[in-house]
Amino acid sequence: MSISAGQNMEKAILEAATKLFLEKGFKATSTTEIAKVVGCNQALVHYYYRTKDRLFDAIFEKKIGSFIGSLLKISHEDLPFEEKLTKRIESHFDAIKEDPKLPLFFFNEISANPKRLENLKFILGDLPRLALGQIQKELDIEIEKGTVRQMTVYDLMMTIVSLNIIVFLAEPMFKTITKISDEQFKQLQERRKQENVHIILKSLKP
Amino acid sequence: MSISAGQNMEKAILEAATKLFLEKGFKATSTTEIAKVVGCNQALVHYYYRTKDRLFDAIFEKKIGSFIGSLLKISHEDLPFEEKLTKRIESHFDAIKEDPKLPLFFFNEISANPKRLENLKFILGDLPRLALGQIQKELDIEIEKGTVRQMTVYDLMMTIVSLNIIVFLAEPMFKTITKISDEQFKQLQERRKQENVHIILKSLKP
DNA sequence: ATTATCTATAGATCTATAGATAATGC
DNA sequence: ATTATCTATAGATCTATAGATAATGC
Image (cartoon, rainbow over all chains, first blue to last red; front, top):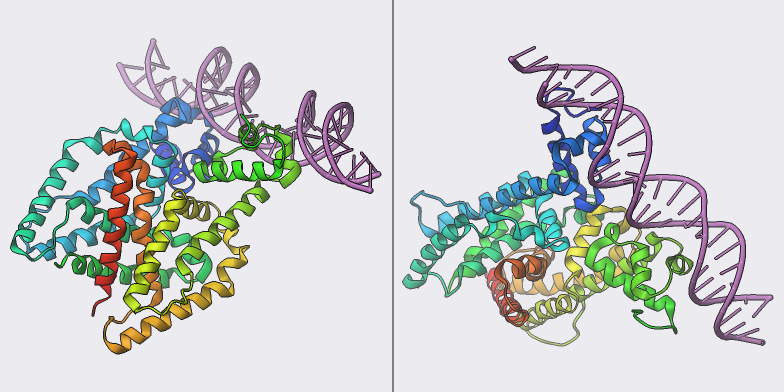
């Protein structure tokens, strides 16, 4: 029954909590259930993390970091603009594929409790600003050249995130309605990734 | 304190519940809180709707109907393809603007409990099939003419929904991080609506 | 008489903590 | 001795129902 018998309970609790919080959200997940999944008693969850809130915050921060990181990773490869952008879109998509519950979790918990966001240094830290500045610069060069229409990096990022998350947001709906197999769903995903690249590249044209 | 003193309690309860469910979701909303907002006692909520689940389902079905309806409304105007599509995108966007919590609510509750979807005749009913068939036909005509690249109506719908919901999904995040005013946010929304139309029309070109 | 509203409460949670016991490190 | 784990429990919920009272329709 226990995720990891003995050894490292603290870690086992974190892992079980991560899984449950991502699946069901903060409110719907109880420390009792976390303990049951781990195979320990409920008090131990509090022994290691004091409160449900602190346990959640630890997980939330990590996940939000990887979500934003996957979008803003700076590439040092010297590639033409379009190829670089294509890689960015695809790697963002692949990161979400690794953790498909993340987008819904993310938007949901922020909406439920926006204060959580304010405590996160990550969001307003230097990394995002730097990365966005860097991408804006690359964009401006293309705009100057006339190969890309006038636009801001924020619009571009919004479009990328938007298109990349939809398959994952709609996954439960999709599977319920169409009764598609997992294999077919995977194919749909991959096709959609290419579609997204296509749409975005085309949308930049002047 | 009461939303609608006296008169129609049943309706007042439904309205308060709708607001709270949309804001906080099924799990985080209690019948106790609904009663408090309405200004009656908690038992009355159960008197009219028996269980929290039935109350929720009534609301869920209505909301899901309007969400899907706004996307699939059939137009009988005789307009050129692009104009018709533009209108469709804009009216879908405007419908969400009227009820900005809807997309998150929608994806969230389906993910939390996919079974809810199975009970809804609306989803698999004739209306969606008819509408989708109609739009596919219009699309095929353009593909035949060579003015639109090869694609399915499903891909097109996914792209529309995806781009149209992002501003609303990200609204709490946006407002928290940028500390933008409501007025500025409204402007951003409108700009984004035009951006979406632009992106989609362009993405259809062969 | 019937329907609407209220008070009170049973029975299930759930979080957090106090205090007992078992395991480990020196 | 210190740290990890457990048992037990207080105090807050929360849903659903039973049964009392008030309001309304004939």
